Image (cartoon, rainbow, N blue to C red; front, top):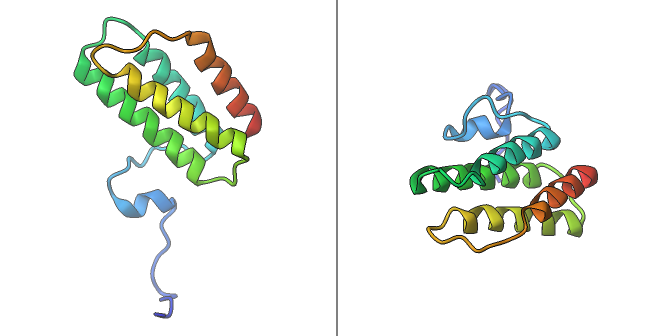
Length: 115
């Protein structure tokens, strides 16, 4: 194992070291979940073109994954993270399945309470 270099500067965010994530990502998982929720509301607008829906779905998945990776979450929270990422992905497809949108908001409410 290689010894750690103590003279190497620390990055303020662990995600900043990868370079492909924006610097303005909020640090707290609850903030990430709220940001994903607001993007999910945009995704559910019917008038968005397919490329924009796909981009928003990827942003939602990234925010939810980052929030999940930065906490020790109970199994129920992990299920909700997966459910919300899956819904965003499916809704970005050309013919999204018909689903009740209130279950999405209920899932976000429950997830915020668990985190």
